[in-house]
Image (cartoon, rainbow, N blue to C red; front, side, top):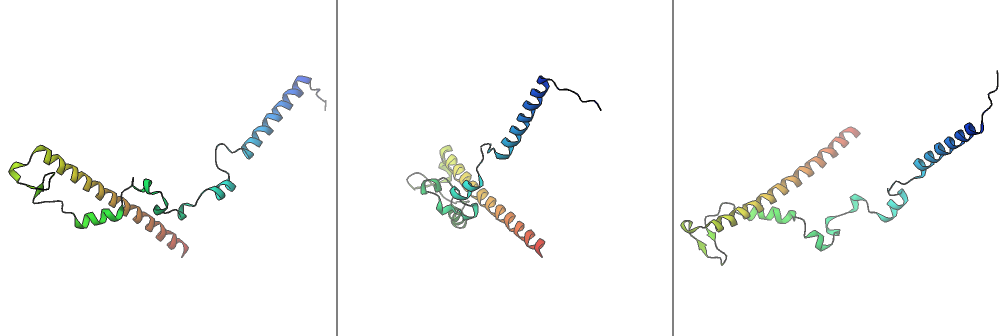
Length: 141
């Protein structure tokens, strides 16, 4: 077999190509790409299972709907009121109801609907979590 002599430009191209390949492999292996390292994750962050709603600051808790209050409102609240009251708390006869009174009633019903939808969402999430736990338990046995 005849030996092929490489010119200096071919050797330079091979060397630069090797440097690019080695550099890209090293960057993929050792690069962080904006993520969090495993060591930093264990030191600076809390596991999701360890976090509770009561751990949040009070100001942040006020931005969320209280599940217990939702349940209590559902038990105590009467959606079909026989009497309607004005801003001073005086009863309003049905014949004297104004569009403003109807707007307040609609707003109250919308808030009640929001509570009901939120409660249904919570129950659906709990149902999904329980069904996943049951599936995992069935797979183990």
